[in-house]
Image: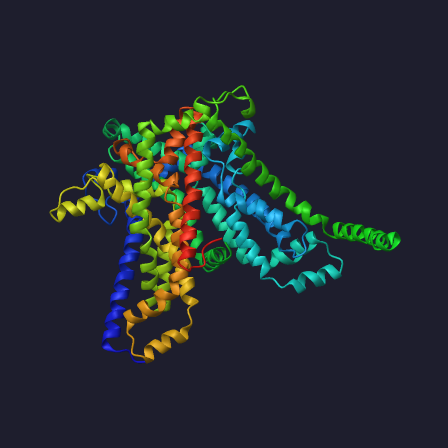
Length: 289
Length: 320
């Protein structure tokens, strides 16, 4: 189909706005990358624009040689993996039985689960519970209290609904119990939804900090995820900028920039590959939720 | 007579019992699988509900919730205290103000972006644009706060350097209350606009293509198709998401305001969630903070139900 002149102008305008959008999305990240690679002196002298000035890796080596950062990155990675695995197990355990049409008590169980989406006890009642359970300052607090999201469970359940019942029924005739069917048929067929939910859970843990802020005091700093450590370093140097700047002008900023890169790159490397999956995941959740 | 009535009962009883035993023998593992998730909800979501009572009681660390003494004024002491607390009133005002701005400025943004992306004729370019637009959603608010601090830094930040070179003065994006509010709203849109298009784009693909063809035959141009086909097709989705946003008008996210705030702008950045954190967990005024949290969740539920009723009156499907 040959497009008319006005249509081509329209397309041009659309492309222009999309390019503008891409620019606005990427600019803050490009800016931080450039600053992390620049020399502190150039940064102080307002010479750094969109290309590194005095290119060097000092900030990155400074971060990598600071055990607080390296430990925190490693610790957060470990908690992310552990949390994601636990969350995926819990989500499948919850979603799978609910697809059985003749499950007795299904309505009650469903209501019991869905109600928690609409009403939550609140920050302080939850805090006091965590305290009573002895989970304050305990590393498990990063994994257990939010390990199962009803929204994600609904996404997985709708995916399970899409798997034909006949597969399950014929396996049952062959004598397979529900667990065999789950492990042998449903989970292997569900890699797209598992990948999506793994991404959601992993990003949630890697990016989360409020639970650690509330439940882990600064005496147990070794259990802090990277985001909370970053927050604390950011804010402690904000107040005393003047004195820090004299000893190492600009270095504080380049180091913060390098830390941001370390905390961001893992996610940026993963999410584009899962795009197809998470789009269908979000759409499924929106339709059924 | 008697035997005639009794007979079927006697016969039916073992049958039903047999039914339930075979059922359980076959499916008991389903309940076994459900045990862990249900225990999770019971422990982490339902037990803390009892702790809400603390809002009406004098908090006492040594006693259980049930045994604590009732608060003064028939238990309403801490609600009265909250509403005479200047910090809470500020937090309440700020919560409503920031959420209203998010709603008015932020709600239409993904709709416009979805319409824009839908008009994009090049498939690969569209995919790249989408990938880039989804990216901010995957960044934490701590990271975004750091990106903003460095981008908007008053002396050596890129934006202010550019503004000065263009002859404008330095703008205190994050260090002045009025500017901070707009930076907060803008960063919220930046983080979520791309992600929120997903639902709208999915709804657009669900629109019958024949409608577009018919519109073309009638000589409708780009804008006419948007107004007469795409937007009407999006209406149900827009209504549902609007209800959800209205329900959240008094809700508050913690991560975003807490990460973006600083001492200078506390008067506009302190919201209910941050107030609950500082007054409750940091200053240990558990009863006051619980009362505030309860007030917030009750109002939220009322708003959600109200918005849902209005939508149903207007002839839309609603949520529930």
